Amino acid sequence: MGLADAVRGAFGLLFNGDPVLWRIVWVSVSTSVLGLLIATPIAIAGGYAIAMSEFRGRRIVIWLVQAALSLPTVLIGLLLYMMLSRHGPMGGLQWLFSQPGIVAGQVVIALPVLLAFTLAAVQAADPRFAETAIAHGASSWRVMSTLLFEVRFGVMAAIISGFGRVISEVGCAMMVGGNIAGETRTITTAIALETSKGEFAQGIALGVVLVAIALAMNGAMLVLQGDAHAARGRG
Image 1 (cartoon, rainbow, N blue to C red):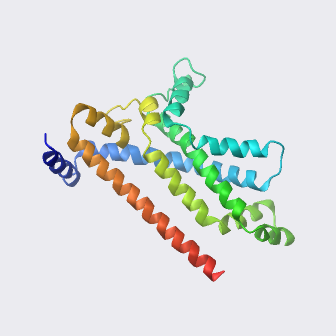
Image 2 (tube, one colour):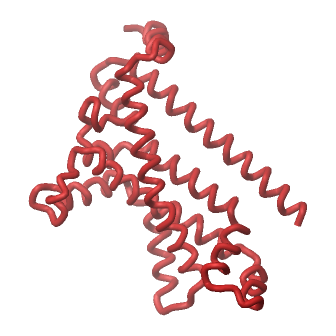
Image 3 (cartoon, rainbow, N blue to C red):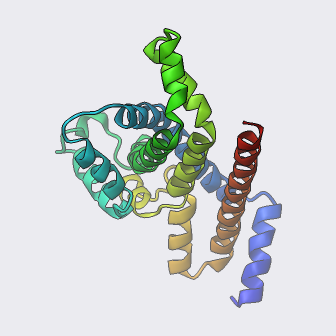
């Protein structure tokens, strides 16, 4: 199949509603969103706690969070594979080669991104917001919610970046999910498989979907940046 034929075939799959292709997209998006929903509250609470607390080893914790950003997803997949395998400590869950296993991987991948962005946003916030809330007798929960509202654009940027990280990874999803058709085959693992088989039409179609998602996320980031600048201008 030539390049022109592959491109025509790709757009045919997209616009004709090919069920196999859109099932792959659904698995990829749904597992990524679910993983992000689980990771977000954990990371926001953790990032806030690290930023607002003074404790021995704090710098080491921050360094570990930042170092985790560069962990290869295939290494995360290997560690999860060993934990979820039949003889692993979490083998009883039977999550290996299943969507819950992929979600677990997405959570682990997203956490460092969300933690690092939230930590940076809270550290960069004007300390007077928290000081004013404390001076007015606000509870710890109220202080936290007030400060997080002030850095909401940074937190939303963290969520968007985290989604971009998990939707585009391939190593962990391949190892933990097993790339099973109709069950654990994601956009990235399907692209790798179809390309290796010489079936470029589906690979290109899925690539178009992935690019569209990336453009949508970049657009959302630009909107957030504009809103953040406008909010600072009003302040």
